[in-house]
Structures are given as C-alpha cells and as structure tokens.
Length: 221
Image (tube, rainbow, N blue to C red; front, side):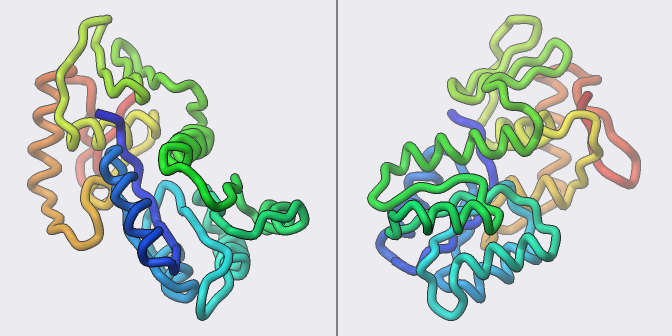
C-alpha cells in the first residue's frame, strides 16, 4: 500500500475529475474536489493540503487567477497544473504564476500520482523516495516500513499517519492536522481515533518513535 497525501483537485470536467479522484484514492491519496475556480480558490486558501491539482480552464475564476491568489496570500502548497492548453507560452505562463509542475491532457493517472509524490517530497525537503528517521525506514513506492531492517506490517491508515509525521521531522504536528490528512473532507474526524493510531504505531515502531508534546501534538525525529 502506498503512502497517502492530501490533495485538492480543482477540475470542472465531472467525468474526468471522478476518474482521476478514484484512481488517486485507489493509490492511497485523500482527495477533496472543487468544480469551479472560486470554490477551488476558497478551499485551497482555507484548507490544509499537501498539494493541489489545478485545471486552467475553470468556470467562475480562471485557474491561473486561482494560483496567483494562492501565491499572493502566501499559500505555498505544491501545484500541478492540468490543462488541454498545450502551447509552450501557456506552460511558461502557468509556471511563472507559481505552478510547480505542468501536465497536458490527455494524461495517465499514474503519472499524476507519481508527479504529486515527487512534489510533496520536494516540498518536505525529502527528495529521496525512502524516508528515514533513526532506525525507521519508509519506502513510499513499495509501501514498506521497517525498523532496524525488519519489515513492520502497517494498515493503510497507519501508513498515512506515519508518512505525515516522517515527512515533517522535528516538527510538532497537531491532532487536528493529522485528522485533516487521515480523513477526506466528508468523513467524521475523531481525535480519539488519532490517539488510537498513535498507540498502534508506537507498539509496532517502538515506544519512543513518536513523542507527545503535551497540549500541542506529536513529533518524530
């Protein structure tokens, strides 16, 4: 099972958005969707996402304006542009507006997933495909976690939680932030469930693998 990241998909083509969202979710991503630029801008401005997939030809607010507003507001989430517009000038325009990558239509969902993983690793400062913290290694492509070289079996949700913590070494991550990345927007989020998952991970990875910062959240590394 591959590790998940939380993605905002802004695409007005309902059929395309549904197919892409289903493919990304099957690969372990958590996907929230918006079908127009105005909604997409608001969700990206107020929500917590590891990356966004943004179409350029959107109703109500063009994709480039959505991106420009995010950047002006200091939103640094990695953005992958999807567009049927294939000219070099339009690609340059998107990158100059603050996009991190560009993919023309038609495309393969597997390539979108691969590019998203690359963008989030780069943004987290972990370009290598294997995350390492002390004795813990997380091979994202293979979905394999090991401690001192010994494989550890984790559920999909445990892998999502571990990925989010390991990609932020030394940083305090709140329960709310973990819940945002563990569950899709419409799912019920329960902080007690996060505590249960943290407890499971400690049993499998070691008692001191994840430290509690009282009143603030959790930290690895």
